[in-house]
Image (cartoon, rainbow, N blue to C red; front, side, top):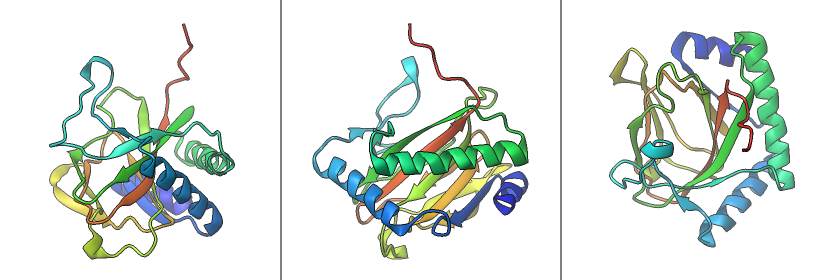
Amino acid sequence: MAQVCNDLTEYGWANFSVFEYLPSELIMELKAEVELLHHNGIMKEAGTGRGADHSRDRSIRRDRIAWLKGDTAAQVSLFRFFERVRVDLNRLLFLGLNRFEAHYASYEPGDFYRQHIDSFKGRRSRIVSVVFYLNDQWQAQDGGALRLYNRDSPDEICGTVLPEAGKMVLFMSEEIPHEVLTAQRTRYSVACWFRQDEVPIPL
């Protein structure tokens, strides 16, 4: 994580392979879960904004999502890994991250997500964004790449990452504009956000 944290500090984003941290069997189990949800029509059309600002605009975003609750063995194992990442980010970068949230995402051919940021400046809720890919034998012609832009110049591309199985990308939620290019085959991932706010208390 030291190199990841150095890249987050210097560039605002980083990527690495998780295969030395997570077994390939776990990635296969997670992919099987999201495929089942996708094919059974359980995943919901994603929107943008929160609360009263929430909307669904297919000219901006066309993926479908299902929130993870840690209620399967595969999700429990993934949550343990995310917790290790949270602790390391706090230890090395002093970010004060208190929790995380995560969902599956699926993109069918023709789906995309236009350039956006994950959290508005100063809100200090989502601090670090993570995308974890589950796609076997992904090629450049399959589209669906994550494109990241310079935090100081949103028109300048600073990285393009293919959604290959086992690859994980981290970036600063308030700083890095990014988009998902149009997929040419069905694309699966886990999105996760490390947050500074506490878990809301039910009323």
